[in-house]
Amino acid sequence: MARDEDRGGSKSRGKVIVVGGGPAGVQAALRASELGAEVTILESERLGGTAFNEGPAPVRALARAARLRSDATMFSEFGLEGEVPDVDFARAIDHANRVAAYANEVWHLTDLVKEQGIEVIDEVGPARFVDRTTLEIGDGRRFSGDRIILAVGGKPRKLSIPGSDLALSFHDLWDMKELPGRVTVVGGSATGCQLASILIDFGAQVDVIEFADRLTPPSDADISRRLKAAFEKRGMNVLTGTGCDSIERKDGRLKVSFTHGEETSSLETDAVFLMVGWPADVSGLDLGAAGVEMDGPFIKVDECLRTTVPEILVAGDANGVSMFVQSAAHQARVAARNAVLESQDVYDPQAIATGSFTEPEYGSVGMTEAQALERHDCYIEVIDYTALPRAVMDARTDGFCKIIVDKESRKLLGAHVLGSYSAEVIQVAATCIAADMTVQDIAELELAFPTFTEALGMAAQRISRKMRMNGAEDRG
Ligand SMILES: Cc1cc2nc3c(=O)[nH]c(=O)nc-3n(C[C@H](O)[C@H](O)[C@H](O)COP(=O)(O)OP(=O)(O)OC[C@H]3O[C@@H](n4cnc5c(N)ncnc54)[C@H](O)[C@@H]3O)c2cc1C
Ligand SMILES: NC(=O)c1ccc[n+]([C@@H]2O[C@H](COP(=O)([O-])OP(=O)(O)OC[C@H]3O[C@@H](n4cnc5c(N)ncnc54)[C@H](O)[C@@H]3O)[C@@H](O)[C@H]2O)c1
Image: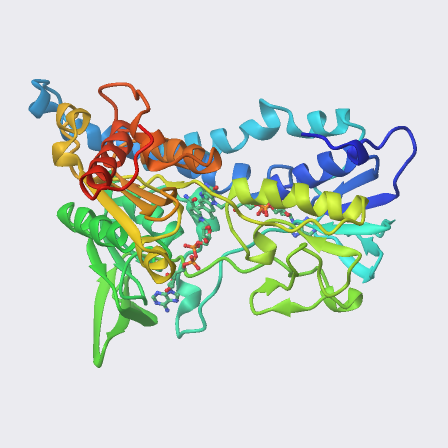
């Protein structure tokens, strides 16, 4: 809700330059403008950023194509006849690229932003600092502001191993014309798992090589374990606790060497994707000219998202605090207020609902089980989808819904789901957390039958029953 001091009125509250026009940059510009600042966005390419032009939007479109094909493998179970469709990979990629263009060609994002009175300078290559208040773009034009908000996002990390130039990066996916017979994905976190899942559903043979002892290391351990099992069931070769050492050409293919514990081994493959991290995209920005410091691969910020130069703030992936579209937008609003009103608002990530479009899908909000048990006495309940009516009806029983409840406050600390529609199911858990509901409140919700979201209510009901049996006070 807008606060009184938020209303800029007709008087300008100074000039703000926003660098980068992804979700963080666009939101920061809109908010700073609402607050009364005069705003310019400098975007090296097209507005929309990774989110629309290269990441979630086209990847989701590819994941949908992969899912349509994998659904066809279940035809006979439902009494249907028909072959699993052949894949025209070039057309699937073309379709994903068309979806990526929607932000600009269908929704006219640039026009929408300009209509708010924001100056948009796009497709001009990277802006670079001249000093702490001035940036220059490729054609020599300079832009000065009282405050600068950096929203430059990230880029694929490179590996310094022999032969890394033989590997593909995420950017290369969008120019591919043919599905390689065998693909090796190095890095088994969010981006790597997403790509591996899509490619195996399209019919490629897939290996995943991940350093950590489990897939998607930041996730709840049960998500990592069950996702690995589901991938392996579909024939994926998942090597965890394994580091990629080198890539070399061998007889028209690629030889990938890797180490697991003390053992070194290798495999032969047709393509290698490096999905090993997403550092801030500061190439060409010349942060040194402004005196802005880095913290490892990200731009260093304090809790108010200010850099080591207080007039310069960072929102979105570039600060590495929380790398999701929803976090980018939230941080942007905080950064814009702090920039324009010189306030000290803290970016306090609340219940961030996240979801990934692997097969099976997964979604999370709040603490993992391990994080919760470090600080809380908890009730933990898991509904396995073999016992969930909708999952049985859909023949999608490979999944679960876990909730973690603080025994003292009876509030939800975290929820983790794996299976169909997980990215949607988790939104309800996030809403319950935001609404400060107790587990008994959640148990009383009349959730639609038969749905996957029902698992959340079932888990809450089981915990409520346990609480009653233990004699804990029950409001119900
Ligand atoms: C494969 C993939 C899938 C993903 N899926 C999801 C998902 O399903 N859900 C989700 O929430 N998140 C997802 N993410 C993460 C999400 O894309 C990012 O968190 C989000 O895009 C961050 O927004 P941002 O504005 O900080 O950066 P970006 O969206 O990367 O935008 C940064 C912009 O800055 C511009 N820029 C960079 N340097 C300069 C410069 N010097 N001058 C001018 N302009 C510059 C770039 O051209 C770009 O347009 C995914 C990421 C990837 C890679
Ligand atoms: N659906 C989504 O919401 C979604 C999808 C993709 C990315 N993202 C966001 O993007 C961020 C970045 O994700 P990411 O997966 O690109 O990077 P990441 O940094 O999270 O993961 C990189 C992985 O590569 C592994 N690795 C690094 N070097 C290796 C080596 N030599 N051999 C084997 N493994 C190696 C690491 O152990 C790590 O697990 C995430 O934090 C997430 O917020 C979100």
